[in-house]
Length: 178
Image 1 (cartoon, rainbow, N blue to C red):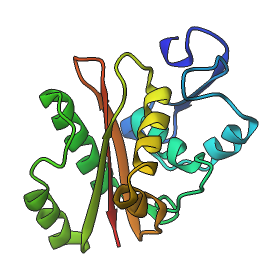
Image 2 (image 1 turned 45 degrees about the vertical axis):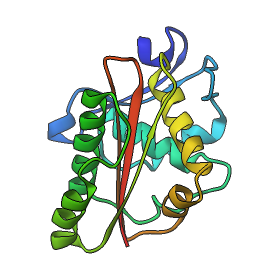
Image 3 (image 1 turned 180 degrees about the vertical axis):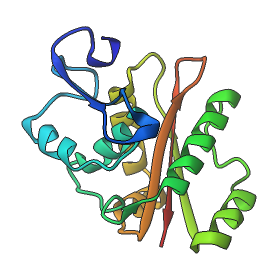
Image 4 (image 1 turned 30 degrees about the horizontal axis):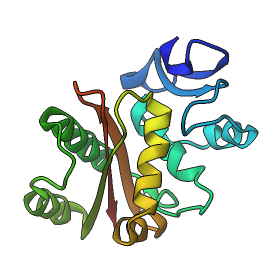
């Protein structure tokens, strides 16, 4: 299985939630990657990930396992914010350009329903697998004081996702409500 680096590892298949039924929603490869290396703690984190797709849960895992213990996932995982993060990650992947494209309009649409919103975006290096890219993107946010403030702060609701472009670069988005 490509997601576990063609070797030993753990994968979780969701049989409890209808839209995800039968899908792989988490992977923990035992073979080391460039950025992701399996730790026993990852198994504990896996047990408390919210309902979501493989890409959403992988991003949330990468945030929760960061050494600085960011708090953005301490609030509620919001399906609308996850969908918005997925849509923006897909948009960045289609453009093959990372950025807050159309954020003024998108944030207004979110704010009208949920309250003031904040967004973070990042991109991976090319040709990385999913978990390496998720960990890489969180590390990128750590290097930016503004992005890290959003990722490390507690929010009432959050959504994360990541998508791969045809250029082999992954584009991550996190959206938060204060």
